[in-house]
Structures are given as structure tokens and as C-alpha cells.
Amino acid sequence: MGDYEETALNLLLLGRTQSGKSATGNCLLGSYEFQSELSFRSVTEDCRLCTILVDNLMRRNGKKLRLEVKVLDTPGYPNSKFNKDIIKESIQKALSQNFKHGLHFAIIVLKADSPLCEEDNQIAQLVKGILGPEWNDFTAVVITHRDIVERAHYNEDKYLQTATEPLQRLLAFVQNRFHFVNNSPDCLKNEQGPLLQKLMGFVRQNNYKVLKFN
Image (cartoon, rainbow, N blue to C red; front, side, top):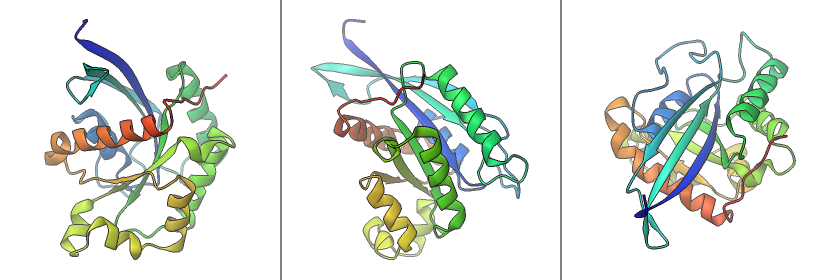
């Protein structure tokens, strides 16, 4: 135990139906824990927490870092089955129950080939309603289906140059905290390390602050 320094990474996933939200949760966990499938409706109907311990991701203070990753998946929003108030109340309750020591980041999950539109702006408003006025200090963006971007012969910078104005505004609001993932099942392990390292970098830039819920 003395060879390790232990820390936690508490994450909330939010996104519209079929954005790759649950698949991104599986990338964070490095295993297929959240149900993820092609569907016209939201596959996730309840908030669900999964936890995993990750060793040897990086070093800190001369010791190996043992990271406890907690990922809270949520129903897709906007949702044909539940209205905003019900989803907001459900998420706030889950946050209070599962993240008693606070939240590091809410992650807005967007699909690379789906331009940011009014539905995504609703998600940003939902995040603001849940996290409060400091929401943009505790929010990051994950853009899924990086393979689509690569097949179009774009790199990440070129893709973002062509991004819609709403997406550019959102990224500016969250201080350009973003990461691209290829979240197909056979890429989970390869994607986990870079994604967690990027998020831990965001946590460090945020001076290890957490957002607490009373």
C-alpha cells in the first residue's frame, strides 16, 4: 500500500440519445459495464453507478497512482419518456447519494458526425441547472466516434475548425476541455488510458477542486 498514492475521479455522464454516452462510460471503465446498443430510444432509463480501480496509470509525488474511477451514467436527454424536471431530480438525487465527497467533472458526450444543435444546448442547460453557476468550471466535452473523423481525413484541430458555432461556444465556456474517443467495444482498453490521463490533467488544472452537493 505504501508504494501507491490513492485518489478518486468522480464523473457524471450526460448526452442525448445515441451520442455514445454509455459507450464512453465503458471506455472510462475499460470494460463493458453499461448497456450500449443502437436504438431509436434512450437505452439508459435510470442513473447507474459503476466503479473501477486503475493502477499504474501515472505517477504522482514519486509514487504510482491508484485511481478509483466512479462513473455515473444517466438517461439520454432530451428524453421521450421523462421530462426535464424528472431527469434533473433523478440525477441530483444520484449525485448526492453516490458522490458524497464531490464531483470532479460532468462530461457532455457528443457524437462527431452529429452537429451541435438545440438538443445539445438543452443538455448544457441541464448541466447548468444541476451543477449551478460554477457549472463550466466542472464540465468537459467528450466527442465520440473519432473513427468517423479520421475516415473523413480530418485531424482533431481541422474538425474543430469546421465545428458549428454552438459547439465552439460550448468549448469556450468549458475552457476547451475536450477529448476525442473511438468508443467501439474492441477499442475500450486502448482508449481508457489516454481518456483518464486527459481527465486527470483537467482535474490538476482545476487545482483538484470538487463540486459538492448538500
